[in-house]
Structure formats: C-alpha cells, structure tokens
Amino acid sequence: MNISKTALDLWEYLAKERRPVALYGTGDGADKIISVLERYGLKDLIIAVFASDGFVRDRSFRGFKVLSYDECCKRFADQDFTVLVCFGSSRSEVLSFVDKIASERELFVPDVPVYGSNLFDRAFYESNKSLIEEVCSLLADDASKNCYINYINYKLTGDISYLKNCESDPDSEFSLLDNISSGCFIDLGAYYGDTAKRYLERFSSLTSCIAVEPERHSFSKLRAYAEGAEDTGFDIRCINALAGRRTGIEKVSDSRGRGTRSLPNSNVELKNTREIEVVTVDSFNCDNVSFIKFDVEGSELDAIEGAKETILKSRPAMKIACYHRSEDVFTLPLKVLEIRNDYKVFMRHTRCIPGWDTDFYFI
Image (cartoon, rainbow, N blue to C red; front, side):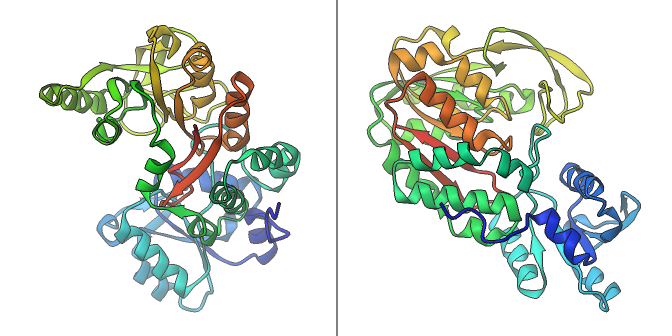
C-alpha cells in the first residue's frame, strides 16, 4: 500500500520550508487552519489574507486587511508565498480559480476536520496505520483502493493532485447502487430534499422515504419538496431531528450551516441553542429498509450504532459520508463490518475541495 510519497506531512513541510503564507478565504475554515499553524508554531508565516473578488469588500480578518488575489500578488511581489485554501467548494468556477492560482505558485488545501480534534497529520497516520491498511485491503474494487490511497495521501499533504487522481463522476455511484431492493429509503441528513429527489427518481424500487434533517431552514425546504412530491406517488415522511445511537433530546445551535450539533470531543461551540429530538434508524421500526444514506455532520458512527438492528435485519445498501472526522476513514467501515461482515465495501470521491463529498458504499 503506497501511502504518502513524501516524508513529511503538510505542517512538517511548512515548518521545514518556512515560506511566507497567504490564506485564501475567511471564516470558520480559516480560523481552524490558523489554529493548526499556531499549534505548530507557524502563525508568524502568515503575511496576508485574500478572498475571491466578490467577497473582498472593505473588511479585515484576524488583523489582516482582506485583499483580492491580484492585490496580494502586487503587494507581495518580492515574496514567494505559499497559498493555503481555507474553505470548501465544488463550484466549477471556484475550482478553476484555485487551479489558476496553483499554476502560478505553491498551493495547498489543508485537511482540517469538520468535527473532532484529531488532525490527520503524520503522527495520527502512524498511530492508525494498521487500521488504515486493513480497510484498504477490504475494499472491493481497484477504483475504491485507488480512491482510498489517494485520499489518505491528500489528507496528509494537502496536495489536491491526489484528489484529482481519484475523482468520480457523481452519477458513477448509480452503477454501485443499481441492485437496490424494493423498500424504504432512509435519508439521514436530507438537507432540502436534493438527495431524496435524486434517489427516488432514479430507483423505482424505492417505495417510500424517511427524510431526517435537523437544521430548521433546510427542513422547511425539505418539507416543501415533500409536499410537492405527493402527486408523484412518493411517500416522504420528514422529521426535524438529529440522528444518533439512542433516542432523546439534545441542544443544538440555532444558526444556519455546518456545526449544528455539539458532540463530545467536537470542536463546535453552541450559541443561541434550542432543543431538538434525537432519533435512531431502529426507532422507525421499518420492516423493509433497502437503502440508507448517512451524512450527519460527524455523527455517522453514532448513527450506524443506532441502525444496528435494521442493518442486521434488512441488510440495506448504505452510503456513508467519511470526511467529517479524521478517523472516519477507518472507524466507519470497521463498525459496519462488525455488525455484518457480508457487505462489499466501495469508496468514491466527487470533485470538491477539501476532501469533502467522499463516501463509503456498502452493497
């Protein structure tokens, strides 16, 4: 297994080179990357912060005036600075601009966890190497193994060429899921109904859908979609709740976007909280679950545990996001196979930076 073609992880490389750094992007992603630079004693390398042209405005971030990329290049024309991208996107125009910058100077997209405090650095990789290699050996096809190896290399190095080496067309997942049996689709992290629409329209074998979404603005759009789909014959039940390992009540942030939930060992601070129900897949008591999608912002492991009886009884096909926590790349498949060892396991990544939109498939 050819994990990492470099002797250094990204942070070790930056420490060794001591090249000036310009951050591309502001907000939560930049805050997280600055925190890691502080941890490694590298914050002093930051010389500038820039944003895409439409987001520059007259503002500052963390003591730096926010510039455009062109302004940054002009102001620091005498410095060979490295760019660290501090946000996520799958928009083609954004990715094209990132590629343009990468053609002009050194650029990395650091992998920092959406949830949790475990950074996927060299020490983390070495301490979990045997589990990573075990999962790689369990993958069912060459495309999955290529995806896994490149994804691990990306997480270590921040080098987006590894992500490009394992990109799949979004519709390629249909060939993996083509044999979904007749039954219920459970959509955990249903957002505004985009994935429910995608799979219900594609697979005529899906007879009903339970769509779970905790974020209240997204949930209102989800419910509107479900109401509009009634005349198509789809039975869609919408639940405004979190998915977990047991039922109950939790406090969540009432703000929009990522980081709705605060979990043990997470890096999410709760503000403007409200209480919300926690549901489990097993609590739905569905006799015939044929497909489950898990995309629950770092709660995937808990949600799998909460689906244990359903997995044992129905053996549904499953799609499970594996990019929220550093450990997801080995804990999630090993947990599923601990419950049932008769799944074939696949992995796919669709174009996005950082390494989001990366999923395991259990068939």
